[in-house]
Length: 117
Image 1 (tube, rainbow, N blue to C red):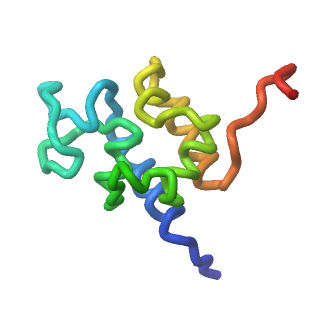
Image 2: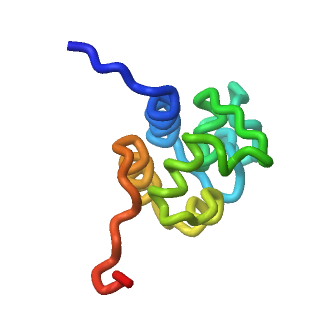
């Protein structure tokens, strides 16, 4: 049985794959020497959360970020925080991968106990 998925989900899945290969902070992508490169460069070996979405084929003009379903879903999965800020404050890739998992599943960020209004 085959399940169809929407393009936003497919892009999030592809982007997660880039993050599994390599993750970085402070740049959309880095080469093997740690230099900043384009996320779509053949020299890229590590990507930030946003750079991984670009490498996966996403086209995200800044003026339309809030309207792009992929960006909206990932931001919902990280509690509305800016994607780059969220990525750069992580110490390891695991929270970033978990955010992608939530976005792929269409789940918002889990509430922290005691934070309910």
